Picture (tube, rainbow, N blue to C red):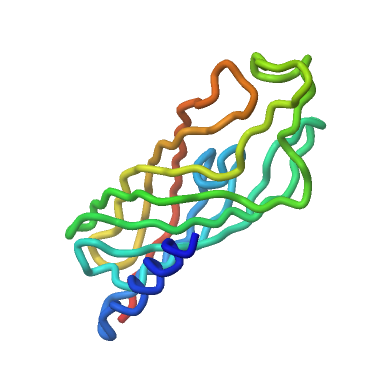
Length: 173
């Protein structure tokens, strides 16, 4: 964890003072919030660079075992790679919650390996995707990403997952 914080500090310290900053707001389904829709804000402090850091947060909902939607706080940090308005993205995403959404009993779990323990979806993941930013600096933004979902105590511990988002993006100096 200490190395990750040092890396993020280094990346932020090396940002050019006159760099273009991109702000994006989008509605995302099954992506960085993992199991529900979310409205996300993303900030990219040096959007005009070939390799740039992005980070953000949002407000989302997650479907709980009690068949109800519960609020969640998705958080993410990652990197964009590409010089044009089309970029590849990779990073780490997860969400904070006030409830234990994903604990399931043995009769409900995903093929539990050990009947004494519950199955749980891990609330963070790595993601890899594609982003399309507007060419003129502001306008329609969309992205699609894929990430593994990790499930504890299961015969299928990793499930492939896909997410997509659409929104508005603008660039400022």
